[in-house]
Length: 98
Image (tube, rainbow, N blue to C red; front, side):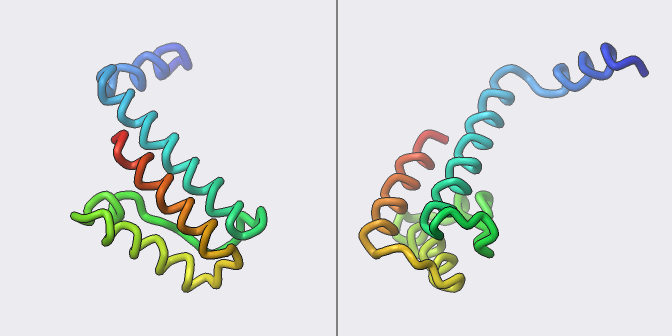
């Protein structure tokens, strides 16, 4: 299959609205990765892997905050509680856009 045909098939696989949602989701996943690395003083190999599907499946904001906070704690996040709280607040705002 020619590269041109392959590209056309891939872009036709998802509708325009679906692609918008996929891009939003990817943007939030990337944002979370960048912000978590900041909480670990720039270390991207921090052992924190937040599953966005699991996070979104939680019913309440407190449950979502606890889920992420527990991940940070298990990996011994060195950031101050203030920075973690700010991250969690921003994360909830980001999730509301989905």
